[in-house]
Image: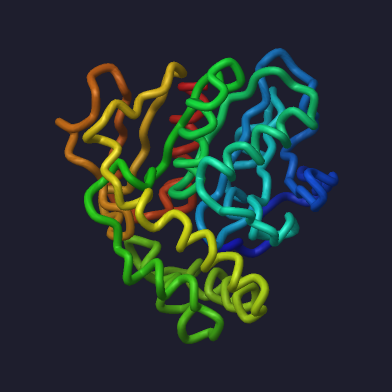
Length: 276
């Protein structure tokens, strides 16, 4: 979802990078001191949700980057990356992410995705099983019960501060200090017609797919997967535990809504580090 205030990221610990990819900019934040080819562990790639950007991960980037490269791209239609979303389907976004990973010159990554970004991560793991080592899916769209489509429509139109406050407030289990800065960042971004059009195109392209219950079909990729959910997520409600295949770790976090990596950052960071 929307980017958060920059000061939470320690100065000098992240670097923004941009390359040309398929005729348009591809931007990402890199946490810590290690680049994509450094360290013994594969890079950890963080994929944000709809209407967000790399700063969605500001409470996770440096915490996860002690001994490995951690890279958080702005997906097409978001942040400083291209506004050209093409067909805009999650499979197209996954191919774009795969192309960016290729541009980094690494042969294997671990991946963490949130909401729409989790579905992109899942698609990439199916498209290119040799590229994805392990995957953490946070509030993955399509694995839970019915999505809140009214919220998604409001989010795509949140160009005023009043609309953005309503959208930002729904992301958290409890109102708090993060709602207002998130609302202001969201309103600033979506007040621009081109940005709003890109988000709406992505939503329209994926509306049917995001509504499909992946738990009703064989959705599990070859890569090991863990699931993380906020127990009080009303945007993408968590699935019943009995619907998750045996052997997949499924962590329901009390006191968290749709943004557990923000609301419960320490717990989520620990779960990611232990799994990856």
